[in-house]
Length: 186
Image 1 (spheres, rainbow, N blue to C red):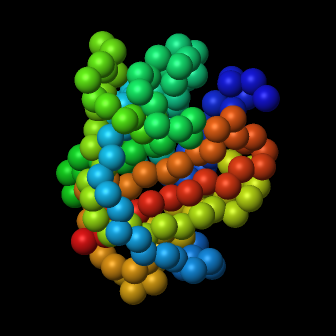
Image 2 (image 1 turned 60 degrees about the vertical axis):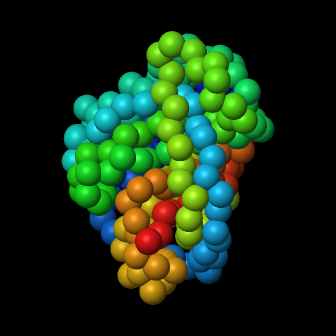
Image 3 (image 1 turned 90 degrees about the horizontal axis):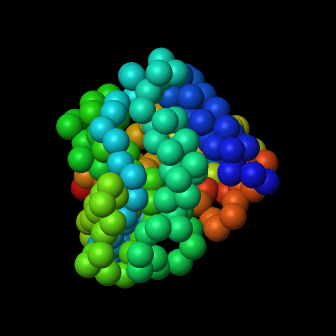
């Protein structure tokens, strides 16, 4: 499937996610893991969910640029082929400003090309969830709505709002994908 089609599916899913109402709690069990810190390099933008929900947000433009410029291929020292989306530098919680970064894990931070951003995902406890398998425009909004509506006891703890991230498998098919979500906990 072409990158432009993947981008189109992702952008549709993102807009649905931001504009949709909350659903009931997570249907699948949540696993809490202690994780080591790691670095991600990619394209970043500062935004908030209110702006993104209008359809005039920065995230769709960032994905378009990431795909059109084949940014993944220019990230040196990649650790695997998965794409990582990091939500970090939160001003407060999901209602405030945050940094959104599309990129890849790296093994070294020595040669970051101009125009790319480095972010560290801090060590700590993370609630690990997996979306259902299916079209990204359906499964991604559903899992985020579930996360937003989950009480801390169901999520495995209080959200930290330091860093959350999504893991996309290499060459994912937007019509049949399962996305891993890691939600930072206090």
